[in-house]
Image (tube, rainbow, N blue to C red; front, side, top):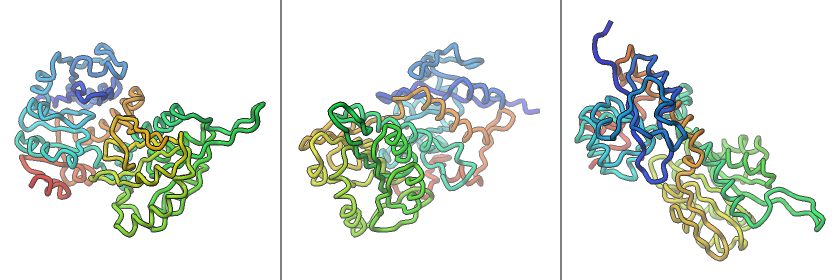
Length: 378
């Protein structure tokens, strides 16, 4: 039996503005403890997700972030860490969170300087079946797609469903969903539940069957493309022109557009141009769920509502946090499923030959070890 000190799993309070999720719920805390770990949280970390400190059982509660980071062997959090948070971590600690280093390359140097072993949860490979239970992008995207449609409906000046009234029949709203990943498919399902007539577009031809299974019409792409590990890739200039030609008419005829198209490790592709927005009817609504990644619409501003020629463009920000109870529960379960294979008898034992671990490892022993990110550290 090992006499070494059990690994401490620590979860801080999120500091990013508007972030209400927490990376640990009581059910996952109990599971970590059963693995022999010690578990700690920063006080009120779970409060925005309606989890009081006393609802965590057998968990150490630290009053300050500095105290928690000083004692943490493994830090699990939702949002990418700030420079100050990395400074507070003890040298050689392990960080597991969403990282998005391509949006802030300087974080890689900070992590290397502290010899932090870091894992980016957004890089968990979808093509490996056992990794599906760890896929935070998919679970959080479920919330995003659902909420984006509700925002559109709430902003709407017209009904979503067809309604027979004393004044005649109101036609159903026309909704176009751009991007048929997890968020897009949930947006389709939600818009259909609200009674809208739904179309969906994706450059990946293999999404057609999923779109149609939800009762939506698939807008045929002008160019065919196979996905890269389950994700879309960046289009070439000629492909972008073909995409625009296909989408123009559908965009002009839509009452609502939900955009969810993203490319891993890069800014969101610009799909809806200013000229396309001008073609839409006054009162139409675009909810850009990719606003924080650069936006799919040329006019999108993060966290703002822009009106152009009577069309409302909503730069949705951190939609997952708007349903924080469910989002936190799913995130915490995904994180536990990722971390638990690294724990043996309360000790941390990282298997660097494991495909899932290798795919999302970013830094280790003061170096960037992910081949796709090494150029960001130059």
